[in-house]
Image: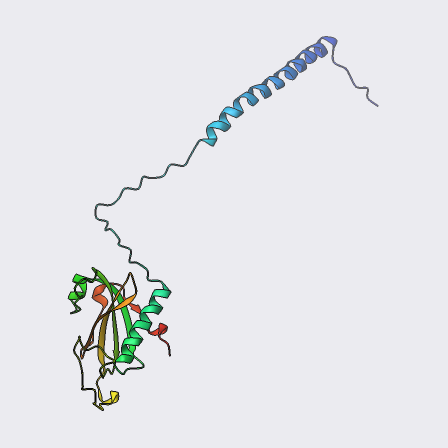
Length: 201
């Protein structure tokens, strides 16, 4: 068995000195790192990603949000439309629709607001076979208006369109009602809401 040879005494002394230097250097490096890390961490915490700035395009258009009419209001408008139809001998109106319109927009489709009525009104259009039999019906808007003793049957009357307006603040119908033989398109007034699903059947 070979015996392990030991290095000369002078080499062993040099190794001890080198080891002592390493022991002193390691704590020093750790100390420097501990002092440097908090500063790095603090700088890193304040960094925020910077993206490209959003510049409004000169050609972009402004989008106007249309007011959303709640279901409770649509239900009330359907009740008003159905009540008006019943007064004109039509128990089951069809294609009942409504739009919120300004006075100027309503004028373009021939709907005139009464004196003292606000600048905006709900405009309701509904189709049916309307027969006015006073005094239950309103007669201010024209349309078929036989005398009270008339026996005209609703089935003999062509399908017409009834127009009425409603005050948005009170949800009460205005007194004027118009009945026309021609169909009325409300699309030019803005968003059109279908009221057929809100009718009592």
